[in-house]
Amino acid sequence: MCPDISITIALFLFRSLANFSNRDLASVRENRFNQNLYRPRINSVGALFSTLHDDPDFKKSVVERLAKLELPFEIKTSTDDKGNMVFGFSNKNISESQKGIPLEQSGNALQSILGSIVDLMRRDNETIIIEEPENKIHPKIQGNLIETITEIIENNNNKVIIETHSEHFILRIQKLIREKKIKPDLVAINYVYLDEDGQGSRVDNMYLDDKGNFSNKWRH
Image 1 (spheres, rainbow, N blue to C red):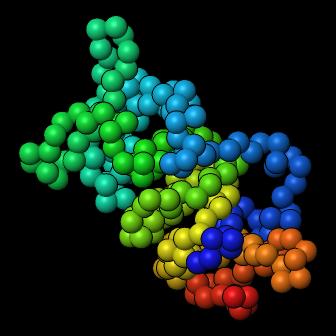
Image 2: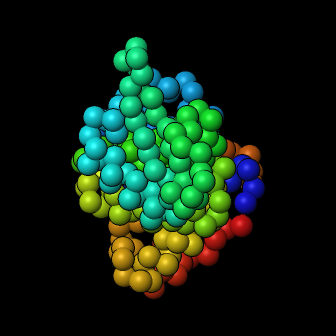
């Protein structure tokens, strides 16, 4: 997909983002755990991971979510002699895997996914914006991620807006609708593109039927 073209997916939201009210906007909090903005948000990330350390049951739930994503990582948290929290991970499917690998030595994708999943699981009755969660993630994991996001926000009664360039997200959403796991009227897909006359960005609302097929044609 072209770099200047993006898709905004609004899950469990409204048919059109034009119906997004001021009251809804007031509750929006930005979740920007992508690889570009991870380090500036290190204090927020540290707070998220302290939750894993303080709540073993929550940490177990996060590990189970990662397993569904086909990321079989064990999470270990502890404190050092100075009382600082130490966070590490290992691959449960590799018998000789190095244990307790520091998070900062992991790939950006794991940092992004883990931060986003933890944050989503901690929120209830909120509207959350996620920017390009597919960055540096394998296509299959991208599909698994959007499916996991739909499960979490449904359980927590959240609303999520996702800005993405990933057609794997779209394909998995179509599959979930076809399998009756989500309803098409709970999904809004908005295709953002540059106007051919140079008048700025335009938005096409892409409608899905109950079989996961688009009822209108993609512009490009």
